[in-house]
Amino acid sequence: MIKRILKATCFALVFMACKNEKKVETTSENTTVDISAAFNEMLDAYYEEGLKLNPVQATFAGDNRFNDQFPNPLADETVAKIKTYYTGYKEKLGEFDITDLSKSEQMTKAILQWECDMNLAGFEYRQDYFPIDQMWSINLRAGQLASGASAQPFKTVEDYNNWLKRLDGYLAWMTSAEEKMKEGMKEGYVLPKSLITKVLPQLEALTVEDLEAHLFYSPVKNFPEGFSKEDKKKLTEAYSNMVSEKIIPAYKSLHQFMSTDYMEAGRESSGVSEIPNGETFYKHQIKLYTTTNMTADEIHTLGLSEVARISGEMEKIKEQVGYKGDLKSFFDYVRNKKELMPFKERKQVIDNFNAIHDRMKPQIEKLFDVKPKTAFEVRRTEAFRENSASAEYNPGSLDGTRPGIFYTPIPDATKYNVYSDESLFLHEAIPGHHYQISLTQESKELPKFRKTLWYSGYGEGWALYSESLGKELGLYTDPYQYFGMLGAEMHRAIRLVVDTGLHAKGWTREKAIQYSLDNEAESEAGIISEIERYMANPGQALSYKIGQLKIRELRAKAEKELGDKFDIRKFHNEVLETGCVPLALLEDKINTWITESK
Image 1 (cartoon, rainbow, N blue to C red):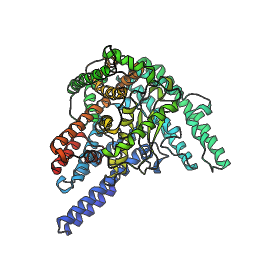
Image 2: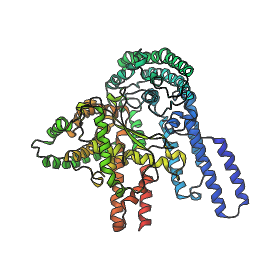
Image 3: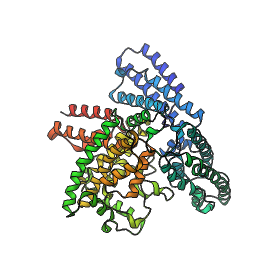
Image 4: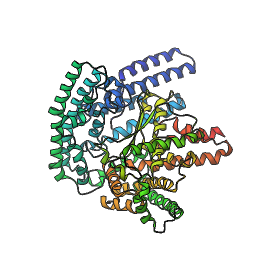
């Protein structure tokens, strides 16, 4: 909800000065320079102010100036500042005539307009009444930071003290979260019981009183070399007191509330349409995540069509491997095939992903002539959250000093099925999220605020499109891995059906689970986790397939219209160089490129 922010006064003075200068200038060239300078000053101010409003985002971007800060996004004061921020910059944008801006600046203006409009619209819905869920909420991100192995640095004594100060803000948020949930209970805004059930063990895991076993005590167990005995003693005492006297009691209080009063009030219904103003909220979420004006009915119909198409492709693989049963039983066969569960140790899972990377390296330059400089790693998802987590990518820092990380949950290595690992690596890592996000962050052309933007329709669409590049990259030689790719695409097509089913058509959690079991090879436990994910964040699951289909459509159009002039590397450059953008803006850009390439 909270994004980037900046300093209005600085912009106002610069813009006034530029307007005065224009009275003196006589050439359009100098006038253009003045307007461009003012526009870029405004963008820089927007970015800087945004970091101050969301300092945790700054930390993840590798900007460590605000590592001790954690403004409470549930506090009225913070909400008022955020609203003023977006309203103010929306007004400033209106002062720039689009005809005075370059093509790149015109796109930037359109993106910033979208940011302001969508974030302000989001305040019309009481999302603050749902501050905690099993997958998306701040407490899970705080746990990552507390581990000492994420974006929050623990290299100096100051770093350690910064985290202690930041935790005071986080504790204030925890108190506010409980208060907001109590307010929500009175107004009819509560989580479904099935989601509350998944949150409880996450909270309970952080009520353990053995400091050595507590996640928030981890930094003390990993002091860097060079810390003096006195510093270690002071910090150990400070962290012991913080965890024992504040963190553990806060988690106990929250767990007690959510396991009793909140659980009792929990919804039996599954979809967001059952909360006040839920139907309108879902329309907002569709637009937010797909960056289109598609309706729930249109998306549902598209999903059913894609499920049918992909099922036909799956039938071909079933026949290729010689399986005689129907497709649904083939799913069970793949889920339980022992040869596809070859590992005994978690490290073997990580090694397998690194081996996939090695196999595709010789082919990557055929599709991409621009590659990111940011380093890349594969890691196991942290134990405290992996039972409810999906595989994910965490971006590296803007300066490239912290690598991009592909996290994969491995609760039990002996039950880990490898059939979809190649497509998963292409999606989460290379050339999926790692290429797309790292190249954006490393761009010398984009304004700062665009380097950390995220539009799921584009970002997840690119990652799903990347899965389809496997054969071109020397992968999918094993029919089960190709079936894994089809399974991953089917998974995203099913999302179109079940997300709209849950939130617009009255589907129950159980109906959505059964539909998934009938149409894909994911494990039942994995499917349950996925359905509950969609319940917690309506609309997010729609972005993947909508974005992928748009990028595929644009590639097919370019191939057809450019013929022998089509260069796949240049097409990928055109898609990636803009960073995350709403899909309509991407389509305009590619259409312009096709015309100019002719």
